[in-house]
Amino acid sequence: MNDWPVQIITDFPIISLVLLIVSGFSIFAIWRLTSQCNRLKKDLYLLQNEFRAMNSGHLGMGREISRVTSELADVENRQEQTQQSGPTAKIYEQAGLLLSRGASIEEVVESCEITSAEAELLAIMRHSAPTSYQSKSQISA
Figure 1 (cartoon, rainbow, N blue to C red):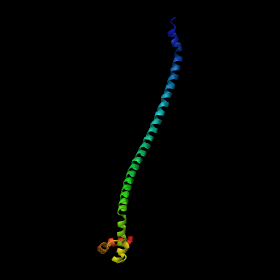
Figure 2: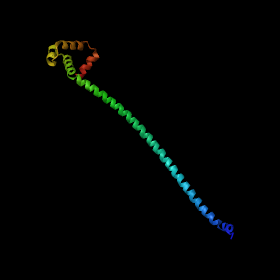
Figure 3: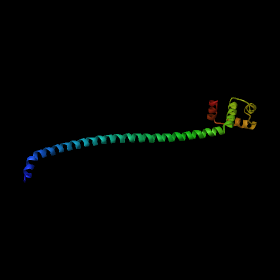
Figure 4: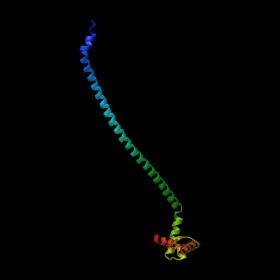
């Protein structure tokens, strides 16, 4: 009738064994979760480093793209200015080239279709230009 204290004492080894098995599984599960957590921490660390490297690379590329874009805009502006002053500037360059090769004012006026006053001004500028400017003109000729 009142057998439960005796029953607990006789079932104690079985209960202890069950608790021991449950504790073992719990410890194994905790160990497994801990190792997974450590592996995930390592993966996270590697991913953070990769992200930092990619981010700094993208920043560098962004700066480079900005620099190239700015440089391209400058080149486009210079090209546009050259096209706007194109024919006139080329005529004067041709006249200067003829003068540096010893052509007369009349030959320059006829060849380049400029006025004699412009040809004379170019001749004066050619003769009074510093030596370095004349040598550059002769090199480009």
